[in-house]
Image (cartoon, rainbow, N blue to C red; front, side, top):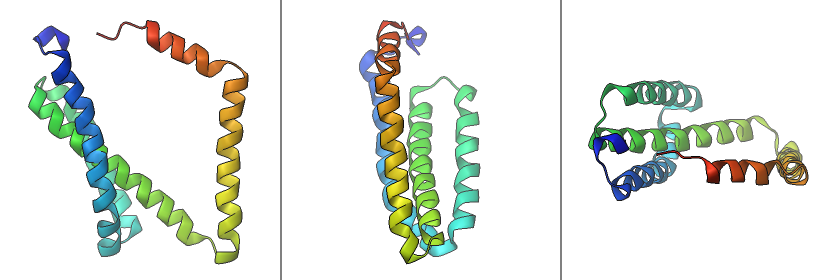
Length: 133
């Protein structure tokens, strides 16, 4: 992107476009799930996300990439909602609490493991020293 003389501010707007799309997807996801169901929503959004990702190298244009970033952010938010609600619906009411607590516990343990091994600080140092642009 920097080779095409785009400023850092314009490149930053591409990152903002992703999170704008993510916000849009959070509102659209439940409506789509209620209208067509989990399986069709998952299949359709996965296909749209795949096409979006494959379209990135077609043009090196800031506006085109901005639209693709909005689409990819919306698709990922909707996929998160589909998977979470689908799994949550599968469990009975008595097992929902144990499932949620197991997920939270595994998340906490994995974070503590990576922090105790020092892997997070090494990854952060590597990312800070990398020259991306």
